[in-house]
Amino acid sequence: MQSTAVPQKLSMSQVLVCGAMIVTLSMGIRHGFGLWLQPITQAQGWDRGTFALALAIQNLSWGIFGIFAGMLADRLGAFRVLVGGAVLYGLGLAGMALSTDKLTFMLTTGVLIGAAQAGTTYAVVYGIIGRQIDPAKRSWAMGVAAAAGSFGQFLMVPVEGFLISGFGWQQALLTLAVFVVLIAPLAFGLREPGFSGGVAPAREQSIGQALREAFKYPSFQLLMAGYFVCGFQVVFIGVHMPSYLKDKGLSPQVASYALALIGLFNVFGTYIAGTLGQKLARRKLLAAIYLGRAVAIALFLWVPISPLTVYVFASVMGLLWLSTVPPTNATVAQIFGVAHLSMLGGFVFFSHQIGSFLGVWLGGFLYDRTGSYDIVWYISIALGVFAALINLPVRETPIVRGSPQAA
Image (cartoon, rainbow, N blue to C red; front, side, top):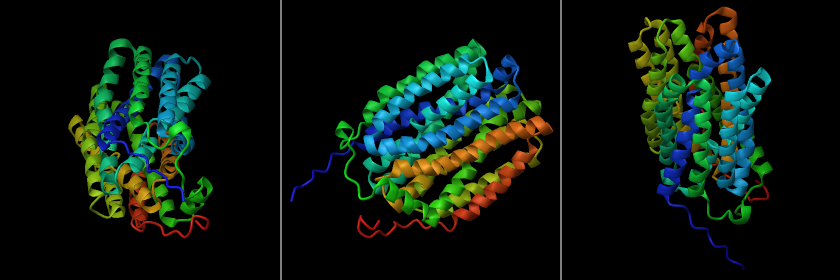
């Protein structure tokens, strides 16, 4: 019988450093897109719904392309996907700056940047973490990567605000287009052993078998439903809160500081969530996070608005912002294994992005028709309670399979 050598794994520090820096750049830039809502709509003479629709398409594109980016990363290794995503990101940001009509703006800001984010964010990076890092530290490592994305928000949002005020919104986007291409050289540190020549290691299941197994499993469906809520809440708040605060008479600096605080506190929130995911039942952790969001939003709408209440709300939401990401992905890995983790993570994230699409689009649509964001805030509260309840029945134990042929 011919023996098969087990490929040597990348070092944990290498995976975390390179993965964290990539997520910092990719997620950090996208978290500031709400700062461009008013400059672009005022310069182009568009309503807020046009900008919101472009970002809604971006989130949906991210979700759709994320499935295929995950498949390619599982089959060919993440390196090629990351490099391609970096190039698309730069082109998309340049297109966002130079678009003069709505269709081009939708294609570049929406489709192109969405596809770029699919290849440079969590589904791809978490696939590497799942394959390269021991299960005993997997949830913690995912928390570190998610915390890096949050640090990117804390770091990049003020930088983006400075670039817009100092150089104008177009030059700010072109500057970021150059900056984001740095993801490509960082991807060299994530070239996984065992994917030589673009050939993936042998797998117990085919793609079709893995998908049939996952979609028939009730816990996978519940995790997808919870992630839908996550996307709805965070993208609505991230994109529309700057305009909501300005409508309430607060300065643009309050919005920039609030988004930065969300990023800063999410560094701690995602790290804590990843760490607790190694020790506690992740379904209960997820339920607590979603319920906490609902309570935080309700209190924010109830108290009189001021810079102080905005900063307190941003700090609390920061603790809960992306803290769903490590326990959700770690649960998927624990149930189904890591062979198809990027792909399955891509499907779960697709549900997240459908929620993102509805959150950002409904925000603009209902504002243009009612002059208020109140309805969408109330929907966010109700969805938070719903997500808390549906995560409680999730079964986290590894799925029991028969032979590979019967899987």
